[in-house]
Amino acid sequence: MDTFLRCDAVVSLTMRLIDSTVSPERRELVELHLLVCPACMGHVGKMRALRTSLSGLPGRPAPEHLLALAAGPASRVAVRPTTAIAPPERTTP
Image 1 (cartoon, rainbow, N blue to C red):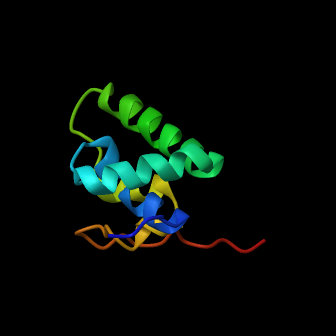
Image 2 (tube, rainbow, N blue to C red):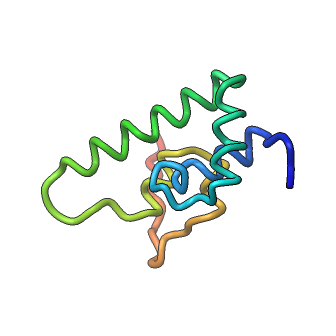
């Protein structure tokens, strides 16, 4: 087992950490990393706040790919939308 996680690994595990679906061993490594990395601690805090805000909205839960987009570039690889989304049209001046 690894003894230290890099920031990109922590970011990729953030939603599993928040949802309590990460293994106990990984959880311990993530928590150790968070003790020494203010950037990752801030990221996890923002994702928890986002999850809380979204869960308070009426209607259907937010799609996971939108949560991944909000989480940043590191998590965009893990979750992709199931339907194609057309890019916005460009307007020229």
